[in-house]
Image: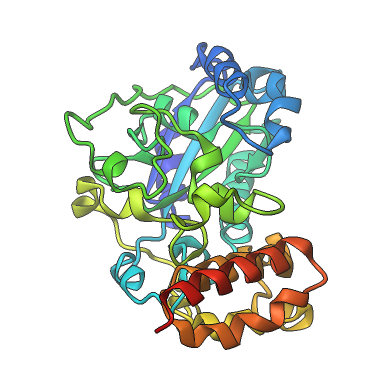
Length: 344
């Protein structure tokens, strides 16, 4: 049964499949509690509010006997770091350069889940993609897909680290796989590349300093100390992923819906600064970027303009000093002051 399940899941588009029990990571509650107690979750209060479920997958659905973890690659066919040298352009995280992965992965998971229901009379399933209180990465390590690297993301010797995770909880008792162990060795490339020093120690992340958190989850103005370190990242950050040596074994992306759209590969900052709410919604329809809304997005663009070192961009950001959103207006004023300092 398990072999047939894996074969079907791979036929459906997943590159690797593993199984663990819901209680396979007994140290999860303690790890999560320490993360929240340290304040590393920042404004993500939902982490603290739903700790009983997030820290104990067995409590999320007591009837579940197995957790099937699946990996779907979105490996870029370009160098994600190249845009960082083009300071008048915006750096958008690779996973967000086209369609929203939540929709794509969930449909694929449901297809696999329906197969399992048909194959096992009475089987029940629940599918999860990054939006429920499920700690996918520790479960994926327990299921043998890979390990959480020093950057806390999952990576595998045969996968690299450019892949999405999906989970299927099921009442079917499947044979668990052997958990994976860390193969990071003495490498610290991911820690060293981080512009904001978001890793207080290997395998630990302080989200409050992480550019992905700051540009996506953080509401309101970003601390002055961190604004200048964000560079031209306007949605997410791939620096620690891009430098991982295990990417030489990365599996190529298979779904064309993850391939970068031309207008999101390295869009001009001046163009993005001019977006109103309607323009933002139209441009990012079907994109994960739409979730953060126009105001937070344009706030990020203003920070990037301030970091561009290009005084010509003052004209693009100046209209935003009167923006109705206080964080956008504040970011615009900050950007202008920064650019005036470098103006001849």
